[in-house]
Length: 69
Image (cartoon, rainbow, N blue to C red; front, side, top):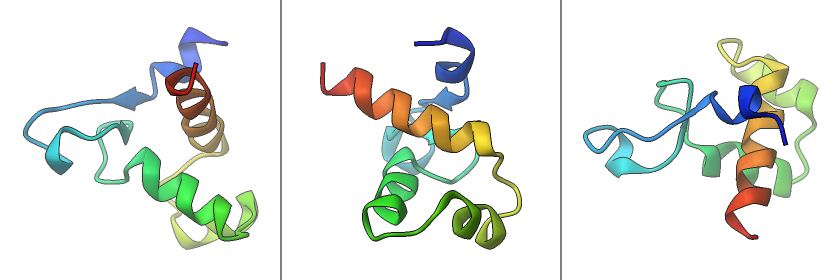
């Protein structure tokens, strides 16, 4: 698993309740995972949230994989 991908995930105690977020934004890893679980494609997510990058979605998945180890 690439450390470069995981570096896109940030945890700040004073932001979003300390939950893991994408690149210091107010987009939680959980939000991305929920969209994917509901059937959204990467393209759907990127269209709805243009501030996100495809690598952010990969980072969310990598983070979730690491968290369930």
